[in-house]
Length: 259
Picture 1 (cartoon, rainbow, N blue to C red):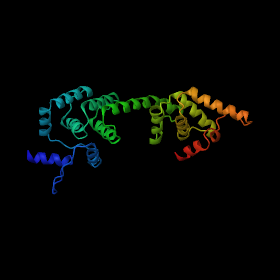
Picture 2 (cartoon, rainbow, N blue to C red; picture 1 turned 120 degrees about the horizontal axis):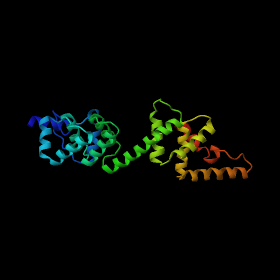
Picture 3 (tube, rainbow, N blue to C red; picture 1 turned 90 degrees about the vertical axis):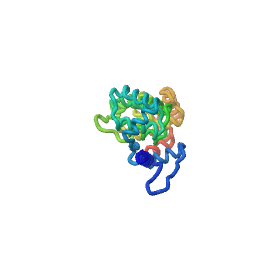
Picture 4 (spheres, one colour; picture 1 turned 30 degrees about the vertical axis):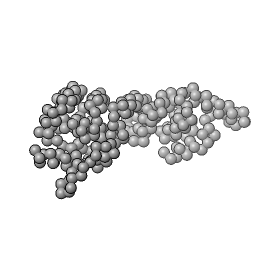
């Protein structure tokens, strides 16, 4: 029992063999520091005896594991239970968080505990370490996923894989900035009119300027463009177009060139 306990403490980073034991305070910063140096984003490994003992002595953990079984539609093996215990004890995620994450992954057809573990570490490293933050993130992710197919078609991507930057832009437009498809289509139209080809970075630069200007609806955007065109016409300039150098000065082109 002593040997098993020592190996367990070593696995979670509490002690190192051959050195004086280091007592770590149970604070968020310490936990994040421990997580940052974890080996290959993997949970500490619990022995079968430890797993049984944890379940027997903790009715809440036993109930959590039962609910996890129902959520993913199968009885988990020891290694999978090890992951659930690690999410709870190592990352300090509560039962509601774990079940919410499992339900989301199961909905996507991703029921592998290895996949769920990897996603949990990624979310934790982004600071999404409580249920409220997770629910907000998943809500945004679902909005982005719903818009992705339409945006891929709009930009003529067909079956090719998106780049990380393109995926990030799509997520930002629909989830962070709250722009719906008609607004994005308007920015796309301006993009093609100005540079004669589809460009995610250029469209992103337009949408970013609209967001910074506080435009939230297509009516507000069209009104701003119409006002600008009217001023140009009154000054004897060419009207009816979206002149990036005038409307957002040089900022739009500079933003595009930096993407």
